[in-house]
Length: 165
Picture (spheres, helix red, strand yellow):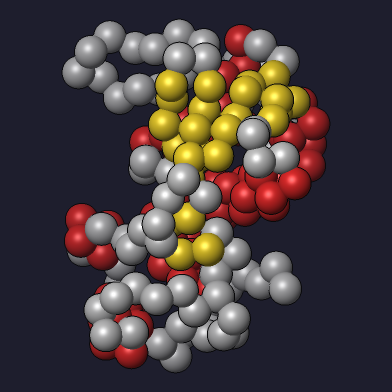
């Protein structure tokens, strides 16, 4: 893995090797399988990134110290094609996690959050008016504390597009 020059986004060619060391990064926030993540993070980082971070969260439950992620196997499991080159779908997905601070590059490891925070105001500004209203209803229903509603099928009256239950 090679990091870019300073001032540039930390985009990396993860496909330069066949595996990437991935470790959990302790975080406070919403469970990766929660309706909040599905409803409000999906439009921010996209469906492939959501599927990957959830997949890693499940694997971290069994392998708490982290794992060596086989890129070819991971790409095939997520239906994104072979991990060949800087513009491969799996490389773009991993870099998207880094771009949106879901993961951070530390030396030769990728540290991935075990929970996601509330979506930032910058990203909320890009939501549709109905999604912003749903987010406001969610915050009002939790007293602004961002409580995890992973056990409920809906968040503030908005049904998730994707369900892994």
